[in-house]
Image (cartoon, rainbow, N blue to C red; front, side, top):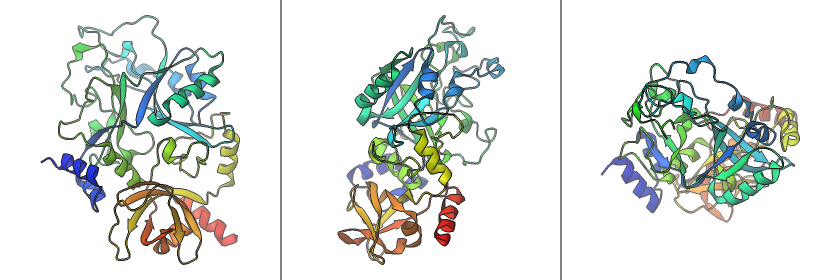
Length: 398
């Protein structure tokens, strides 16, 4: 049986003790992300509307790409595409509500017509952006954006039936490899570097959707929105795997996603590392909830952060399926509460912990009421060094 499919089935029964180790060596995989849905913003005021609401700078979606698109590529994908943007919508008090991956779809003039003889043409093509959002809060999210719309010339539509969200992850091209060394890593899709789907350039129409590097972190892999009636390119038949495997991959990297893992209306975005995940711009100007974000950022010390967790017994063996989200993590040596488990899957999880407790006293961490379950917290490799240094300096002078 194929290694990845075997892993997927095993994870569906119970993520066993070495699941994450297998993920590290299983090779490139792809998952249909059923926990995410797709909405569409359409209209001339789209960029202005979102710019005043979201944490990131959306204006680049409205800028011309420039002369780089002059050479129409043979495959039906633009020579230069605007990469997706990760952003969040906050409450006026600066608390997290929803996260979004925003994409600008390929326009008709960047693709060949159906005969393959020249650019496609679609007069008066409306401006559109697509967003990959948490499916569990889809209706509420649409209502919230509609409330903010007022007189803006923007249509907001649920297109979850037409499009799906996918993630491509696992071991593959080195993260620091150049686009020349790894053309697939530059902009993989309908033939950008490789025509993995073997699609002819003469088929035009709905083609042009592609993979992009995950806008949060390169180590997360590639992300994309694709029509629901197709399998995205560069996915081998035996490499599609369950979404839980992507969840495990993301947990290992210390990345929370969606309005359940990042509690809606409660979470402080900086504690969930949204700055390090490229979700917040400090140069864009005003947006909903900006005041608290700016004040917290410039104060410079974040005492709690989301971190990867490993659950073990007293002998160091991994403990599977014994911890649930919301469990309290305590430092048994000091008796202090260290934080809470935000996500749990098998023997791994994510926790919002006080860094002083998590990174200095991790040998003494355990689950409250389950003292036989030890918690090992780790600092992700991608964290900026100043996140920990700032805390250490502040603690030294406290």
